[in-house]
Length: 400
Image (cartoon, rainbow, N blue to C red; front, side, top):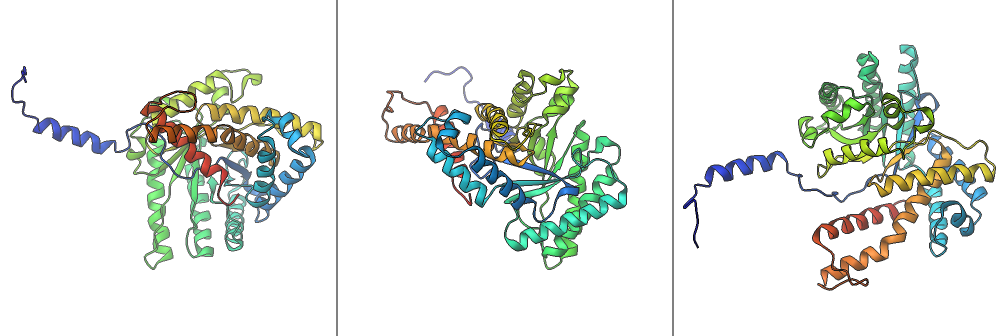
């Protein structure tokens, strides 16, 4: 073979390549298989108790039974094909009865407000007591945690104290930190906030391990909220590594973001093109890193619990959930028990509508033949098909 450069000394090139590859071990695009909750339920700390999860589930189930008497209502409200409606209806009722909340966040920020220090201390202790009760009863959601106040609010010491007190009380009552804990860190206006918060978690982690004794291991991770326009500028793939692997997720904050860029009140909605842009920046920055992504919420509750008002809210919420799913966001916030009904209905319909077709396409690829539609899929298409099936399996199975 004729060459131009002759014998090229590649040792230095290969060393440099390996060093760069080590910096980005997950740099290939794609979703990493594993369970991710389909939602996060936010409850203000002063309203949270050991009965909160059961209360939300009971209220949501009652609403579903009142507003969705059968599959015909599922077709009418959610636009589900008639052939899928019975399965969606049955799954929603079963889910609400068995596992209405997959991810719970006790809110000490916007939903809670600013309180005297003694009052917030007391609510942190009460919240810890409730978590211990839920854990003892076997009803603590698979993922759970709290949202602390932002450093941008000007009182980082308050944020740190609440987190410290809450975790210390939970660990003392449970003898360990139960699995599934994550803390939400809002209004990240500067990258330095993330560095400081990750350092805080490291110090708190070591203190909790000493307090538990006996070689106990505690791992504290957090999710950042992407709410301010300037936050988009410092999102990048190596951010999680920079923070010592503590960054678990990024959650989009629709209302702060749309207000900050000057949208009028009636345009503060999840399906606004400006929100699509922000979410796509988040996707691009964190692709292949293992950092989970979550969408925001619908800030609306039904005007009443009449069937007409419930169905009106469910239609709008389901539209937003479907919008998020189509854009690759498989998790979002739920702020009212009624949202659980439309959340699960939209998620189940989304996955069931394509599951069999996706499975057949993957099977055809593995067998080296064209699928039923005569299409030979590319490897870049098979990867998202496999990921979609994995997500569907996670959403359609489990405790619910």
